[in-house]
Length: 415
Image (cartoon, rainbow, N blue to C red):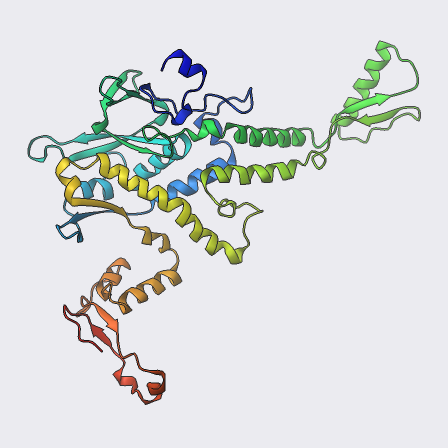
């Protein structure tokens, strides 16, 4: 990028250019606002709660691998190496839950999540051997102006730079220019600063035990020695939690505002809402007192799954398929996170969905039983559907024994 483009903020962070890629705002809207590191941001309770919720929600979803035939039909491929990596052991040190949790933390805070892909040689040449999460704060992306290829430069634990090709890196990115995701921590630093200042003010008020600063006034002219003696005596009474008693000709004038006048509580509540907006998390789900009432929490949760979790899952699935499988697997395999697990703790919703699936013929009883951790039963592998739908005038004439679950065949008979 030449000097003219840099000075004029050519294209901004979403601009298309060669060389080192930038994902932080070049022109702040409030001067003097310092950037926040990961450690600083996570000390703000709302940031921690949002990241904790997002990472635990996504990491708890099983990741299934399917083999796709020529007709587009999908069947679970539990024996392939890719399935073992994504659902059993991404690497020697992590479970799938721990791996995806680390990826979500980097994605949400820095707009990018990276993982190094290790591949087999020999008979399994090209197949994934392991995936290792990398710190987004230690990664830089360079776009070669001569051929447009991407180079991922990583500062490893030994303080050495390592260059990787795009085929060696799983790159999950949020919105941006398509090459790199925008770093959320840098874009939300004003909101973080506002929350931090409110938190500091609250701590300061509590440290002072709610005592306000002010000045003592008297109509008399005092010497410097008298001023010092009066100030020391007054301060000592305040520190000892005693009620200061002033002479009749002396008065105390408050200078600082009390917490109510500063609207400190309202400011802190607003900061919670503001930070939640950055992460797409309803404030009710991070135990905010200003969130939705209990009667609406189910709808709030459903909207959160639909508007925040689902888009993140889709982009993660596509990022995995883009880089992790070998060339042959990319054409006949698919990766899908099992979103139905979001209802695992909701017995009522899970039972309702299972009943609908069995009664309408898109799941067998044994499939539902296996999902519930129950053993299969005899004749439970047949798809069935409800039949014998009668006109209203014939409902009273129908024998209860006629109502049945009809097996689904290749050429079903019309009722």
